[in-house]
Image (cartoon, rainbow, N blue to C red; front, side, top):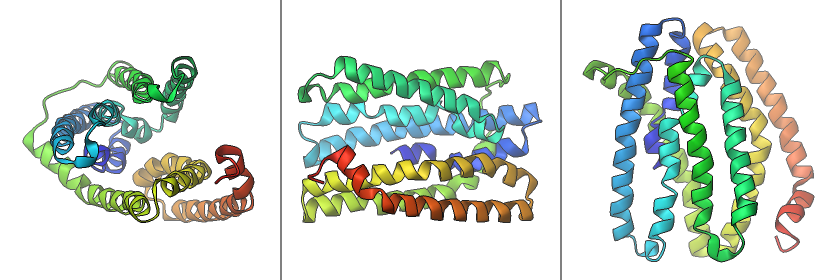
Length: 264
């Protein structure tokens, strides 16, 4: 559902903002259109979730948990990461994300006392993240003087078409990744799902440097289309990825023991 709300704008809108960062009128149009589309898609995902919860047998007894985790879709709607990437002001994303994570971390230790408190986890996470999202949107509208307007039909069509292929790509990757959980749970058991999830989280930590480099360089490459710079960036990414992969392989066992215990 988050991928539906995102609809590939993390790439396409970033490119558009990067290209027109010095054109205030065009920026107003881009931000207004993308937020309008994402808002409609958020309402659609909320409707889909309600329907699925009544049709899916596995959701019985867990409906409240699913509803609480809908904050993820709302967060993707209101936090314009694509705007900050496009104007290459990553410090705002860093500060706001760090703040939301710290709020989540502190509240987890203060509020969560037993396994029965599990429903409070998505609420706590949502409070921190949505607070950061609201602040980020306020900064866009005030500091960068973005004026929201009702978008034209032609603008809506353009941005939907521009993002459509990226959305399909994200959707296929998500189906591929999430189907692993379903297959492991169905064939091997839920215990194996926990182990697999821990492995992916460790992999995710090692991937952070690569993701940050890609997000930082993408607007510059989109705007300048400098092939020599892009080739150098690709080689840098390749070398860094190779080094990180070797480190992950060498330290996989002690990291797993530290985070998951000897049983994993």
